[in-house]
Length: 204
Image (cartoon, rainbow, N blue to C red; front, side, top):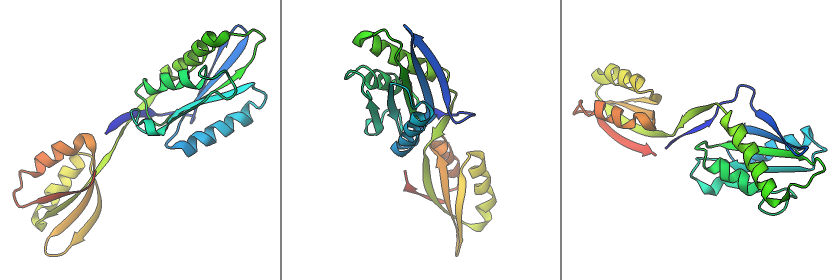
């Protein structure tokens, strides 16, 4: 599986949305796991200790893996903050992403519909500004070949961005190779040209 993840120069991205004098400060970070989301939330509480609410949403793994989704209204009326935030995150196609929105109340109540729109819009805007990079899962292959093919196989591994993690020398040469998912089929096809080479999958 491959998917986009945040690639942030300064480790975080932040913007402020003002609606009827209420300020919604949206801060986005890369979060590979819920622990990193917790760190993000605690950092924002320290950064904006006097904010009225610190609402958050996270997609802490692949975008379609709902097991790693999370949200909190943080004192706002139920369903008006975390839910619209997660709605945006879970449909933006980016994985491993955490957003905390700190709200400073401006004196005018926005109502439930206004809050839903404001929190969703704050996340939408910060996500739209987020640069990303492609994350590819790796498949580990075990390759056995004659020594005279080692140079050609190492060339193919380099060609397909596969990393040789281990070499074992005995009657034949054994290689343990980590292959990016998008390169796996092409590498297997190239190796298939050598009938004496044995290839097995270690782990997907």
